[in-house]
Length: 442
Image (spheres, rainbow, N blue to C red):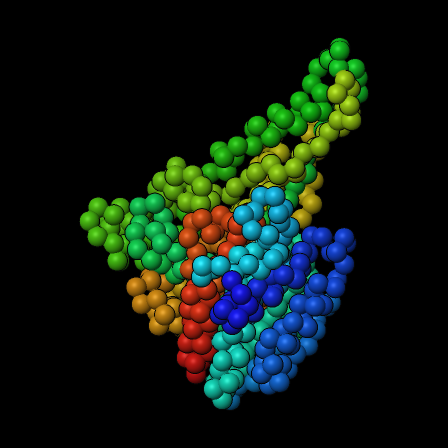
């Protein structure tokens, strides 16, 4: 598609995608793409930069303040502009070409999280153009190191805390507008995260005597690591449904019909039963009710004919409320049951507090969604991934995770995967949701 034929909102996102702000590769690429991105925002959104106060917090944090007409507690709208790596060989399109075709923008970051960042700025720019001023202060918090558990968002939250700012509402990436959110639920839903699972990265290591592969004796380091990983299967942690999940099912039951309505009502009243039913489904439903564990990296050995003296594996765990870093480490050690396997915590954070789904802040998001997607049910859920929003629970009791875009199951699978893309019409509706939210502030 020629640039002249590209809708302006799509062209602006394409320009963002073309800047390779891959935070995991900053040592290779340098910081220039990140600086270019901040400069690009000034080019694309002149009214935002004319009317809002901008400050840099750390090298990668950008904070805008839009002064409101009243003195109510402010709103914070969040996003991040760094992305994960992408291998062009696995993609149908160049992941960093910003291709616009057939009503879609293709490329790394279109969903996570440059698309959601773009619709925030599109909304603010449009409102400024119309002469609108919000009823309370609005902060735009953008970080450039979310994908590497960076410090930008933490520093921004710390700066607001030091200024005595207690946001009425914080909204970051997370849920989306989806069809059939669970296998036995039909219809469209806006999934609004009220909290997120904790995250822990563990390294397990084993050391044994080296030797020649022609005469193996006893368990090698690799044997011990392999046995340890095999013991850490889906049954490592008992399924149980957090209160957020049963509340989500109750919301779905209110609009369901027939046997599905009966099932949802029963599940919404029993956290134990819900835990077992959803865990039996596997995949995303199971992850809602269970602390998950996955081996993501392994190392050991230096030659094909040598028994290595050391081997290791890296494990990634996502913790449901009720579990902590300390409790899951104890559980992992008990399951491994091998004193020669050492467990080390590389990084970890407990699950966040849960924000209320029955207050005015949640309702404001739900009402804004309803203006654009009148058939979508706003439902609370527990976010399985880690986000920058976790740092803001220290300064606000109302921290939510919702990227106002439509995402199919295929699109959600493309986040951190291949062929990530967003529909242009979805971007326009995402902008309109933010406009509705900002206009509704009192």
